[in-house]
Each structure stands twice: as C-alpha cells, then as structure tokens.
Length: 157
Image (cartoon, rainbow, N blue to C red; front, side):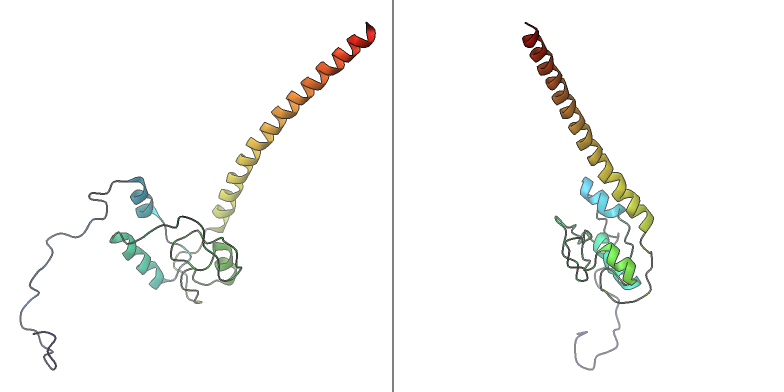
C-alpha cells in the first residue's frame, strides 16, 4: 500500500491514467462558459492567477450574480468572482485584488480602459435619458403653445 507508514518508494506506475485531458466546453457550449473562458484575470498575483485559471479550466469558476463589498472602501463595488478588493482600491494600493497581499501583480489593471468603458456606459444611458427629457419637454412646449393659441383666440373672440 502506498499510504503504509515507512513505504516511501513506489515500484509500479499509476494504475488509472487519463487518455485525454478534461475540456470544460466539450458539452457545455453556453454563452456563460464562453465568457468565463475568455475572461482576463488582471490585477492579481501569480499564485491567485493560477488558482483562477485552474477554476476556469476545470469548470469550478462561478461568476458573481451581484457585486460584493470591498474590504478597503466598504462599497459594493467588487464585480469579479473570488476577489475581496475592488479594482480602484487595488490599483491605488497596488495589492492583489484576490488575496490582498502586496505582491507583484502579473497583469496590471488597464485603468484607462476601465474609465473609458465606465464613461461609455454612463453617457449612453444619460443620453437616452436626456433624449427622453427633450422629447417630454418638446411635448410640453407644444402643449403650452397650443394653450396660448387657444387662449389668444378666446380673448380675441
């Protein structure tokens, strides 16, 4: 037995060996699996990056359904699974976003793209809102003009 006390040397090879490696998208061709496989793990140390890649490789990675609370700023801004620190805090403090240790970050955060992405998302929604407001205000203006016209007609009559 290999677990026997003092039996350190093993004379035979492993009994069962896989003939092919596990593929996490072999039977699961969903959009969620494709997103998980394409995700870039940035802002983490080498060890945490390897852990996250292992989770993705063997279908153990589960994305967050709603943001978690950051341990630094205490806001619900952590949007990446298994992370404890939000992107802005991790970028400012130069720590790993997953373990929180001050180690070498393998792939640093792309802070410029984060800001532009945030700006692109907000103005589009703001633009939609402003367009709706303009439409509503145009309707209100047309309605006010009609009232003034009818009031003018009544005063003339």
